[in-house]
Amino acid sequence: MALPAAELATALLVVWTASAFVPFVPSGVLAALTVVGYAYTTAFTEPSLAVLLALVLVSLLASAVDLFSGMVSGRLGGASTRTVVVGTLVGVALLLPLGPIGLVVGLCGTVFLVALYEDDAEPRVAARQAAYAAVGVLASAFVQAVLLGGVAVAFALSVL
Image 1 (spheres, rainbow, N blue to C red):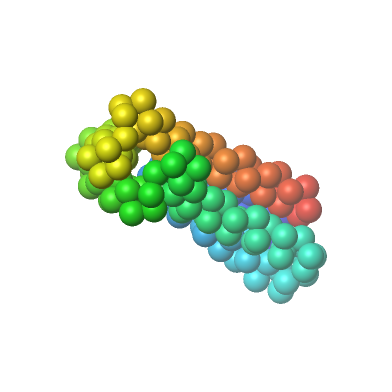
Image 2 (tube, rainbow, N blue to C red):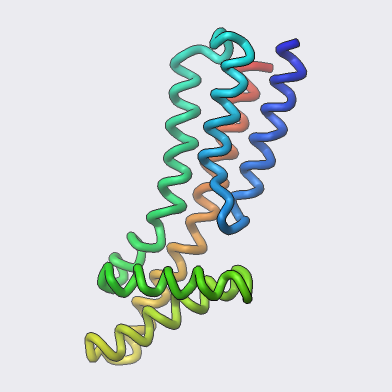
């Protein structure tokens, strides 16, 4: 019985890895729940406790990366926290009608305009701040996918 459950859990982890590129899907949390769910089906005998904790922690780290990367990269680019938060909210609002392009355009456009208006920054500085915020949002999906891919491989190696 454990082998079909292990195969199903591995397949789900691959799906959660791919879903890292889909907005509003909590891929890291779903991966952590998958690993814990499999461990529950084996009465916590597989994978070992150390492996289980490591997989869950890396999965949750992937979720944290997804949540905070835009803000961190925007701050590294020189934008204020308030600017990045407002940009993220506008991006999420534009995500619904325009898809992922709306997220990037809303975030970048807001950070750019607020930097020009609020800080009296020259256009070059405002463009740099917007670019940093965009790179953070786009890179977060790749970082999350790499982390979750590692979770899927480590899980498969430990149970199959």
